[in-house]
Length: 252
Image 1 (cartoon, rainbow, N blue to C red):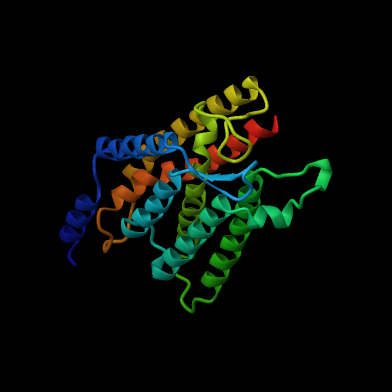
Image 2: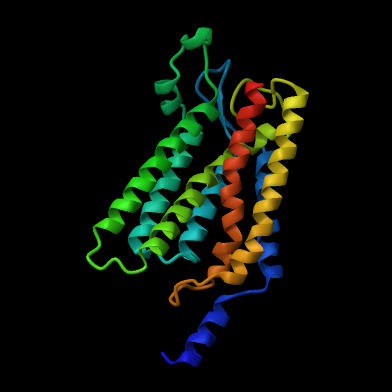
């Protein structure tokens, strides 16, 4: 490929920030709409676990980032990130991990918040992601672009893992009451207000960063429409902010 052809390919891969911003707005609208739909309850009839329909959007973003991937970490790196993201979704929508870490009766409490199980799962997944990504790079015989490959793999994995945090968006919307992860029975109005404001500011900051990410991106020449993946990155990473804000509303 000649220099002029490379320039042409690189130009074709990029899009105006207006398009990137439009994709982000569309993603947020879909997430809010899905969060407004009553979730699916399961488990104890008196204190059921509730899975919000935003889980559909979380999984969809993982799939879209895998298809329109802007990272140069190879097929193996993409696969590692997708697996980590799906495991994060499992942690956000099931009680198995929470029951194992926070058994009934611990600390004079007869229950646990699903956010606790998810945050614990995220911590473990992030550690595994870093260890696996580093080990994968060390196993390469030719370690060219080591830092780039490692950082791309970690950032992609963080975005995939964070996407599941949107499963708790309904807890930040004052639409209905309940007893657990999908409830709006927060500890206090002040805690809820502070958590929501801080989350919004962080989400806006991440979206603003995507301007520079889109401008300075150097995706794999084989990638198709990687700007879509760049547009989804701040939305997916913001899932971590949403999950932590949700946890704060039920703990304070």
